[in-house]
Image (cartoon, rainbow, N blue to C red):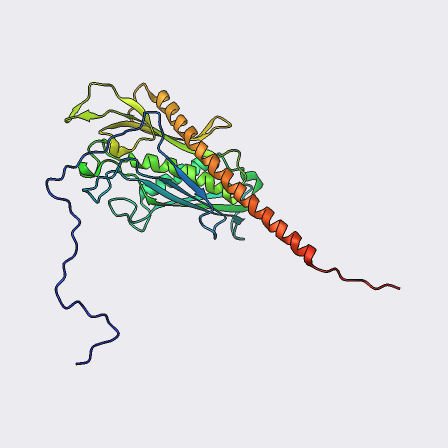
Length: 326
């Protein structure tokens, strides 16, 4: 019988799928925080990653803990966010008149962003993140300069922080219900959206940056440690046994204003101190934001000067037409 050339024939022998598993006696250790309590993780921020959008930016926090060679699963998660801004563009004719810019935010996790696979339709947590992000950006954009216009901020979380360490079976045990990873995601969304708005050329009163701080209390051998709970900047939920409270702020450094405040947990009498620590984290992330925007502007200005110089050289090379009179 003649073989079907339109199909790829199966192997002649039997095959088995590869199994990526560590030996049973491999020790699995929880990642520990090696940074100081007032030290922020390293950030990577770049603008202009989506050419078809009016403005775009990419935000990443790489994993800080070293990867164990025996395990293929990373001990701690990282944070990767992309943002694209579409607009300002005129509203449809059938839309009502608006004297200010209509801002729309859309936050969506990629299906592969977390350990538990996400759906293709936005859930309640993603809609909640979109509302918090819209509140943080409304106090920054000068909407009066864009009447009868709309702007859409679309954020895609390529990799989000987990609510806890995966070795605890989902990370819900140490966080009293979990949800701590969303705090760091919101802080990253605020920072990357601010960079994308600047890249789009939308008038703003200042660049808003997001910061998160938490009140943590680690445990030892299943018992609470003798030391009291301490405040840390930019917490990673997988590095802490118990997170008592966390706070996210959207901060305008030059105006010393807070456009967004979200607090979760029970901080007791340390609420004001927790907010101050979150503001410090936002100030640290603003340094990276300002540097990324400055580099992007210098690159654009350099390309503009090169283009202008090239046009001048072309004009000099052309011969002028002689006009005959008389």
